[in-house]
Length: 269
Image 1 (cartoon, rainbow, N blue to C red):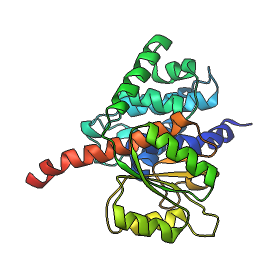
Image 2 (image 1 turned 90 degrees about the vertical axis):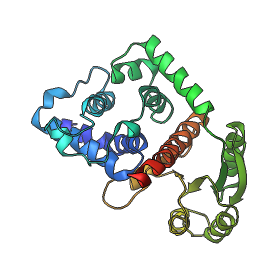
Image 3 (image 1 turned 60 degrees about the vertical axis):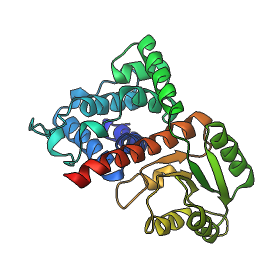
């Protein structure tokens, strides 16, 4: 397999990670684009000591952690990025470690390699992320999932994280009715529902009336990680692990909280 084929093979999940870090599709895909442009200019930047996938995530992380937040250093990475990045939007290193472990399934050794730390430091970072996530403000969660056992697993998991489940919707119409009645603080949504309706369509309808962070769950994540159309920022693959749901849900709430904290300052500017 050629290097370009190796890169293409791992791009969808790198896009997922980038979107989880930045909180939206456009910014995440811009960082991936900046990494690809840097790689095209100098192929030796890709270190495959721990495999091509880990090497791509390592290169991405080097760009992510080194780009000037003011966008004034003129390098290719900065010029490819959207202008809204500020210190308050940067995902802290502990969360990067936790997402690499829980969302992307890297080993501690691989995470240490990607972040340029050692295993002991990696463990400290993930412990710090765990404490930070435990301190998240509990919220009301709507689950949109038509498979009974998956819905039960999600409900149990979400309650175990300290959140309140306001209901489980199994169709588009059920989801809209529940959300309009109870206004959730977080939505976990399957994309394809058994009756032929779409969790994605239901969420898009709800987002026209109020703002809420959303985590999508799908058995086919690669279909929504191409960058070719508006796609979810927070995406979990089926089958999922509890730590994966915890990490991504917390990240979605993290950005929502930061956005609300910045709102009064923005209004007074």
